[in-house]
Length: 304
Image 1 (cartoon, rainbow, N blue to C red):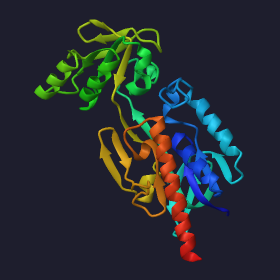
Image 2 (image 1 turned 60 degrees about the vertical axis):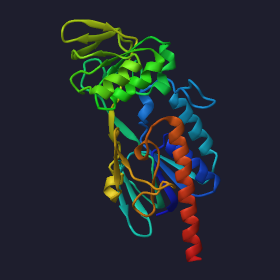
Image 3 (image 1 turned 30 degrees about the vertical axis):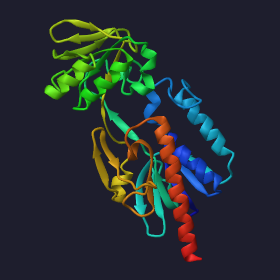
């Protein structure tokens, strides 16, 4: 069986950015990707330098096309389901039953968002129900914005989102506001609504507002939710990688060169950093690739 210098699990922004660096170092690499990027629910990707407003899937298609021109790059459309450290290499088994070997492993497996259980929310996710004002706030055009409390950091989110419109924080029975939080929201001119929310209304994917338990309807143009997320892949846990707890969920612990607690295993992108956006994921992938490449050199020198 052919052994690649590196196997990259995940072909979204972090994984493909890492692949580009290793391809340009003429290293034989394999990218395994199941085609489910985290931002697939959003029609456009904003705030990406020189690509503001481009659809995320188009950016990924362009990246794959450019990588295909490098002769040392191979692609597999599949899901990596099992990973094993064999000492001199890592063995990856996929959903289709195939097995691949790599000297180094780079996990760019991303996160999956855990959405609140609210009628009408899931079908609007990434369109009019959003999580990042830096990615989507400008297009609301200073309209009426709701922030649905789901975690303690929702207070912080509401204070930030206030720069993009007229904001109401819906506590929805999820958070208690202490004096410090109330003072912050007052200074940021954020209104507070404590009546529980029962549904999102309007012709999906648009929204007209939120229906409250007392029958009132609060008009809105967009809704932000600070969701928690979980690892999209079991591979880091299978390999015994350490994790760090963040307000947004567990991420893989990495060094400054994106090495995990397991020798030879690197991690990049949303699965291994906070905060999250496309640009940060791409930069993370570049750093991880440099770590992988230099570790390969060190091993080759040691065995020469």
